[in-house]
Structure formats: structure tokens, C-alpha cells
Figure 1 (cartoon, one colour):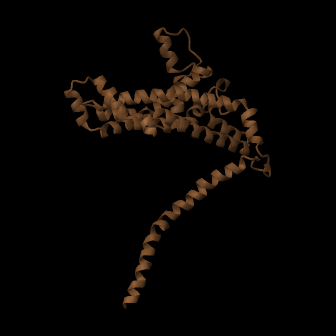
Figure 2: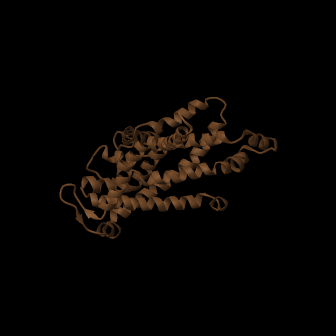
Figure 3: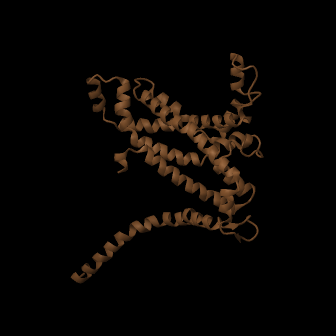
Length: 311
């Protein structure tokens, strides 16, 4: 092998080394384009058409968007329900999750037991959760009514699942019960990352547990709180499992609960797209939800972060 051959082989080796990362990532890129990017673009195209999945697509322009925003009161009712349930559950999750994480973090014995017990509902299937709460709040056989009547707080059972506001509260309780363990785990991870020297210095200075929590722990967990708030808002706007399984688990024909009080945006999207078979209108709802998620995420991020962090 002469010197010229060696010189020519070096650029080929460098080119091969540069190509390998792209070749390894090519399967993921192709799958992403086929199953993620293309459906997003196609659904946007579909939102300008009327289509039932059988007949030919009929171009209607912005008619679906005009109908959704001006002639569909259930769309605004679904937004209201989703936001109300989110405002009931999210602050409870943030404050309760942080407080319980702080208490568990300072426990000497039984820490792993409490962590596991609180995290178990998070890995429970939504179907099981729907059945559990349906049984608990049933008018005739529910344990909640039986307990309240036995304690003398009620003379007779309450129709929990047939009252609009009570149904929203029950869904919020379901969300808190299911996701509290996740919030505790994230906050515990954040507290573990805080240097213990800070707490020891505060203890030497005579700081109480309350001052340590409010002056040290809370500020240092701000970024984690912002992360949980933003991701929880995105997840809350896509709420579907809890209300659907709470009501649809018993009667599949009952959509939205009493007075459509449990109708969320995703439930309306599923109902209009697959029950009423209006795929174009369903795609319009999906893009309206996308715009709502963007707006809520930006606003929540701006409100959660401090001025210095925003700059």
C-alpha cells in the first residue's frame, strides 16, 4: 500500500464515521415521519373537509372552525368543565404533593413504605380506578353514602354521580388520588438533590422546620414546580380516562354525565369523531385543543417563573 492509497482511505473512513449516526437514527426518523408527523399534517388537511370515512371528502374551507367556535355550545361547555376540574385538582396536587414529600423526606423509619403506598395508585389501570369510584359513589350500594348515613351526617343517600358539580368534584378526587404519588416522587427527587449543608446551616442558625420549608425548600423546588404545573396543565386539557370510565363504564350511551358536566374536550373529540363519524370536525376540535394547550402552557410558564428567570 503506497502513501497515496493511505491518504485516500482516510477521507473515506471519516465519511463512514460521520454517516453511522445518521444510519442508526434513520429508523426512528422514518417511523416518526410515518406515524407522528404525517398524521398531524393530514389531520390539519382533514379539518378543512367534511368526511365520514366512507364517502368522498368534501372541501368546506373554514366551515368546521366557524361552526366549532360560533355554533357549538358543547365545545365551550367542554372547555369550562376541563378547566374547572383542572383548577380543582392541580393546586391540590402541587401543595399536597410537596407537603407529603417533605414529611416523607424527613421520616426516619417507614420512608420506603410510604413512598410505595403513595405511588401504587399511579400505576393502577384507569379502568380499575373508574370501577372503584363508580362503586364508592353509587347511590344504593356505595360505601360513601353508607358511611355518611351510619355517621348520621345524611338521612338518605346522595345521587353523587347525577349532580353536575358533585360529578366534577369526584373526577377531581380521582385525578388527585391517582397522580399524587407521582408528584410526591418528583418532589422527593428534587429534595434529595438539595445539599444537606444548607439544611444543617439553617439548623445551626436556629431556623424552625416551617422557616426551613418556606425559605429554603420552596425556592429551591421552583423549577420542579414549574415543570409539574406546565406538564399537568397539558395533561389536564387532555383529560379523558377518568370521566369516561366513571360514566361510560356503566352506560356507554351516556355521554358527558349529568347536564354534560363531565364532558371534557377529548371526550367531545372522541364522540364527534368516532361516534358521530365526523372526522373532519373531530380534526378541527383537535387543532383547537392544540391552540388551547399552547396558550395555557405559555401563560402558566410566565406566571410560574420569576421575573429574573424569564429574562
